[in-house]
Amino acid sequence: MGMPDAPRLDRQVCFALYSASRAATAVYRTLLEELGLTYPQYLVMLVLWENEPRGVRELGEELGLDSGTLSPLLKRLEALALVERRRSAEDERRVAVHLTDAGRALSSKASGVPQHLAAAAGLSPRELDQLRETLGKLTAALHDSL
Amino acid sequence: MGMPDAPRLDRQVCFALYSASRAATAVYRTLLEELGLTYPQYLVMLVLWENEPRGVRELGEELGLDSGTLSPLLKRLEALALVERRRSAEDERRVAVHLTDAGRALSSKASGVPQHLAAAAGLSPRELDQLRETLGKLTAALHDSL
DNA sequence: GGAACGTAAGTTGTACACAATTGAATTGCC
DNA sequence: GGCAATTCAATTGTGTACAACTTACGTTCC
Image 1 (cartoon, each protein chain N blue to C red):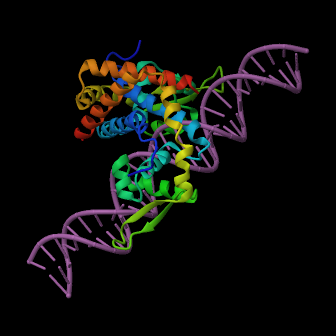
Image 2: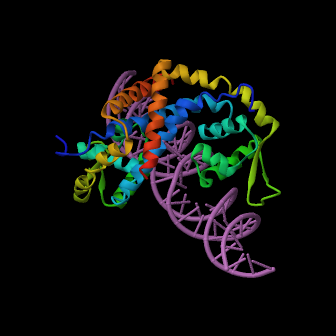
Image 3: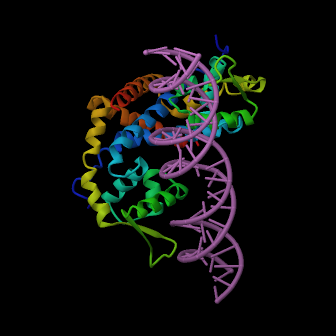
């Protein structure tokens, strides 16, 4: 029944991680549908709601995404009229991403999302805390190993 | 400094999940490079190494992926001569995915991957166990909420 | 002040994910 | 038996991810 030493074991943690991440994205998908955002777009908006304007590189550092991902994503946010990209006057290489009024206004419509997600998670606050901490350690160790 | 009630809190667990998952995929990317596989392709091979042949739908159920993801992925595995797809004779709708000799042989080359990943994770066996369990509960709850 | 180096954002190409649709094959139910 | 409903895989279209490359701009250091 199966190959003698096929690495089944490893499916465990990494596959669990992969599955959980996709499941969370799926829940976000339904919640964010009425806002017209995807999960990565929502993450960018979260960063901008905290503090704006931000450079593309800055956004990339906060989210761990590179310009290959962010450039088209920001173009779509701009097409939705939620952000504006302006070439910096001092440094023409930089593009500052500003919120529009509509982008700022979306913040209040998104304010219920975290509670919905916490409810859908079905874990106690203690478990969520523990999970966040373990995932942080894991991410750091994985990055160090590269 | 920042919007009054922008939902920063929620970046925590879900963003941690998203980051950890991408970090794990990045480590797999370097490990699997010499095998010529991506992480999702490796997952499919793991399932096939366990038991073979499998239908596309079966693979999809094990991995939580649909035919829109699997069909092109399996085509690439076939182009690599690791699998063969054969229309079932009894039910012409079904496609059975078989391993080739090369596909079977790859199993031994992949046998070191789990250990490498466990080492890169930097977590104790107890933490990994706990993490796997919590992620399992989380994934189940998230799926139930849809 | 001009070449070498470095940095920022964008582009290209490959590979997932997933919703929605299609088309072929099977099953159920009259 | 025959047709509607279902099932299966593939396809289409959109949106990430990320490596590799390009282009434009700045900085340094002669």
